[in-house]
Length: 210
Image (cartoon, rainbow, N blue to C red; front, side, top):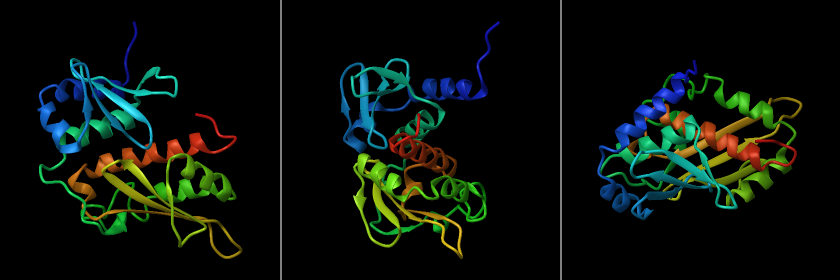
């Protein structure tokens, strides 16, 4: 007997829940492209479509072939489309995500280990990281061995700064987000979104595999 994971169960629950929200409002709020069958949006420089009849989220490769979105992808998209505040807007002020209201504990907190593990994996790979950020249409910035502004969504940017290890300090990774980011998604969802961002960076790094 085949069984599905709890992650798949939650994706299915959220797909069903998505169908009860006002899709017209989603289209207006986020300036989405849409047709009778799908809503379309971009997430970390990759096109996605959401089935308007069953709520399934898929991403499209360069050939236009559709692939089922994984948990992090789907849950981030569902949360943003369904639960972003009605008046969500950017503050225009980037802050360390640890400064965002509600991010005092948990996996994204300064002592949570999430960023250090990622920084350790990037050690010695500044050139590859820079090329990956360029491939994701990042905008190069100063202050860091590698620093880019990247788009989680076209309406929601983040800044990545990376400092490689030296004789005195381990590698360090910092993410800055707009001060109003939590108007677009919940704390737990931000972890999903950044996990997907780091996965996309890894995919675009030379010699790394999906």
